[in-house]
Image (cartoon, rainbow, N blue to C red; front, side, top):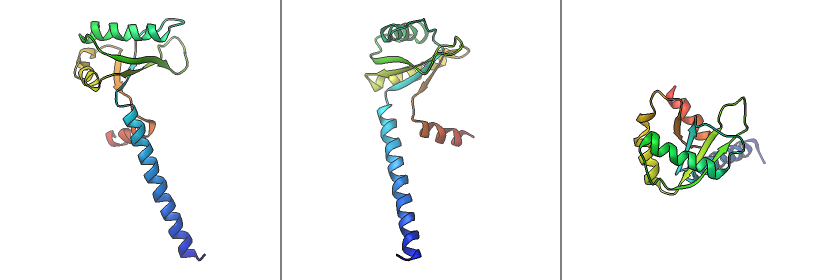
Length: 132
């Protein structure tokens, strides 16, 4: 194999690798489509998934004025550290509920509670570059 063939093969391999990584990122973001990340909701010791889900439902009702949000799953992520509450990963049954939550986030202005969309690490990095 000559040098030109080797260079061409390397270029093709890098291209295919980039295409596959982009497809993987896209699939991961699609799987997170109905997810939110919630930060700042108090955490009890030995809090169960059910407890977390109840806290999220109460939060939506009291702080955002939303009732009947259909939650598929709500759980904490990461390790406990220095008394700060861990992030809640929230998976909703309906995309409409996610949009409804996003529309009501203005009510949280000035509080220490934050609700964000859930994206893959790669997408978060890309979005940070764009904002800068």
